[in-house]
Amino acid sequence: MIKPDATSAGNTGAITKMIEEAGFRIVAMKKAQLTPELAGKFYEIHKERPFYGELVKYMSSGTIVPMILEKDNAVEDFRKLIGATDPKKAAPGTVRALFAKSIDANAIHGSDSDENAAIEGNFFFSQFERF
Ligand code: ATP
Ligand code: MG
Image (cartoon, rainbow, N blue to C red; front, top):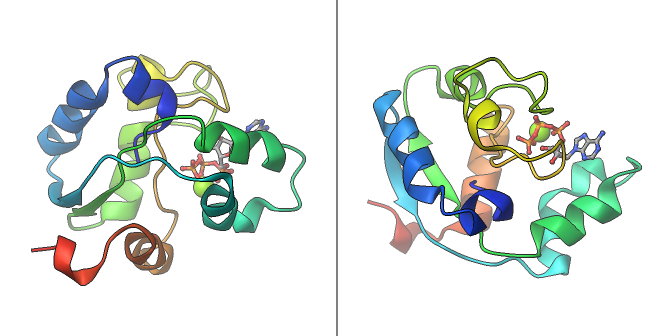
């Protein structure tokens, strides 16, 4: 999911290009905006963490671009492509090193397991929006 800081800065195209050039197939993609309720549900696993309120507010503040991606070893390879959560620690050339503004406005989200990728894909897309 491309986050609001990256969509508002006009980096959707550049990030999508990096994703495709890294060998991912974009199976589904759309623009959307989360309500605070839905952002809270999406990040429910972080409910107890001190930044949860800010995260929910931020993630519902603007346009996002959720995608379903396919590739061998997709979860691990995508995390390599996006870089560390904190852009100051992200390796050069990664999406977060190039486009993230801060640890919260960090340009992009990647699923952390195949299981969560399936849950998150179903959160954003119905079967009719895939091909
Ligand atoms: P994501 O799940 O968005 O791909 P991640 O797996 O690298 O990011 P998580 O630990 O899952 O990082 O945190 C989820 C999101 O919460 C981060 O992407 C970031 O936007 C925000 N976040 C994480 N840690 C902090 C923090 N210390 N302060 C503020 N926001 C944070
Ligand atoms: Mg995470």
